[in-house]
Length: 297
Image 1: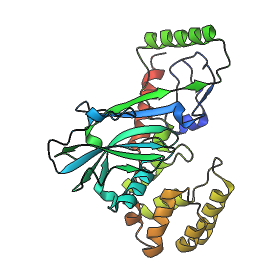
Image 2: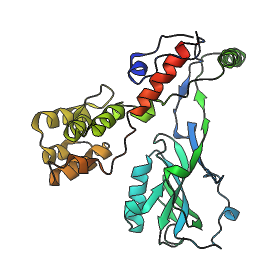
Image 3: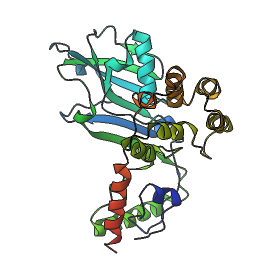
Image 4: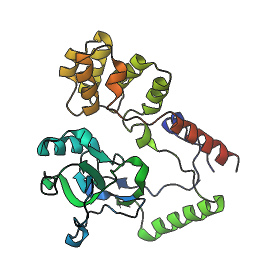
């Protein structure tokens, strides 16, 4: 086992790696098609990209219409916002079990109350909503079993036989360890700005203004110059209305918060109500896994 974790991994509590073997190299997510996610619910229902006519069943009635949301190159909340505008319903009426990757093609379940299948059959190109059945239960995180991933790795710099041997050696090492630590990955904390654990901790301490300003103005070297410039402006001016005009439209959640703070500049808790953050316990869990695996050396 090696303790040569990267500074970012250590910051997020992932202080050890489970294997000493080198990676095979290559690139993931070169194309949206290289990362496919399909959701599975506790009752065995699968959201698949390969929908068939016989999968639809509207014979039983219920309070909620269950649909499959298929999207490409966009995050779940943005997709829901666009669908809601198209069918003229509030985004809050659309329930989901989780947020799926943006740089991917994903399929997941959503529920909508008091609508017909005809109204919710939506095709926006990169976003499709396909009605499947009615249910008395809405879609929430509590009924999510997991996700099935289909990942393509391109440009591996080894011959096929050498790559296979490297994979087998890693597998053998992991079998000797008895498995791998089930860390919360970078996505849990934010891939460009891994801050959600810090913000979650501040929210638990009821330091709402500090949490909001970190979310809005903390800089990252991985962002565009325009995004960094907008964050610096906000940090120096604390002018939410003017900052809103400077923040790129790609910073969807920051703009959502700024819109609220432009109207209610002291209601920092209210500004967080529509945003989702992983709580700081995720980092604590990662740290605990690291200690456990270090003890196995």
